[in-house]
View 1 (tube, helix red, strand yellow):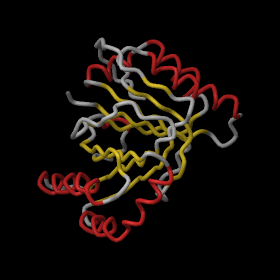
View 2 (cartoon, rainbow, N blue to C red; view 1 turned 120 degrees about the horizontal axis):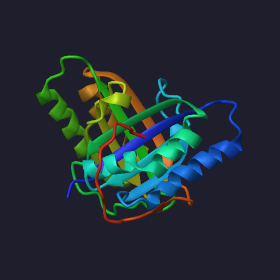
View 3 (cartoon, rainbow, N blue to C red; view 1 turned 180 degrees about the horizontal axis):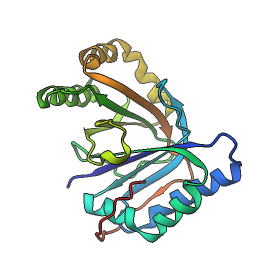
View 4 (spheres, rainbow, N blue to C red; view 1 turned 180 degrees about the vertical axis):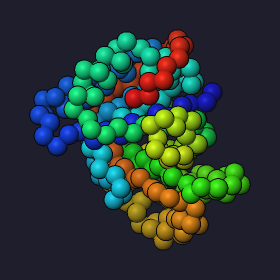
Length: 230
């Protein structure tokens, strides 16, 4: 089974009423009930670690196939939430999708889990060999950084809303303390960054905490196709 990771970053307009933000998040979290969805959580960004990123909220969801992701994207309930609750209050949206390089377990993340999302934009003419080396560096982090419960990485397959960011990863911790404790491995992490820095044109790193209002489902799927990707 190949798990599809789907991450959307949102920038809510500065003057937005909190009630409308809550409606957006309630609407997005409600989509966990759709048949194709294995896991879905949406909430405020805990911390942004990149100067080029000003995103305020994040959605992370998982599917058992690309067809299930397309089915979710095309579902009338999803399209309604996007049209009525998301687009009117957001002035920036970015989405990245990838096939997880392993089967992350559990698929549904418990409340208060901490997630570190990393997007990499590669310079032009970076070879497939180098791209493979970069993915290898990311995969090796779990064995050398304490506190990581899961890590997946892969190449983005939905370029329309990804702004040229072509490699993505999700690292999952039991909580914020474990995520912040992992920074004790700063020397190792910096060494890995040095290995790939020359090949990068941009990096986005966002920390997120699964809110208590999130829930998950592991229902069976139907399939369809759509260009929507939120």
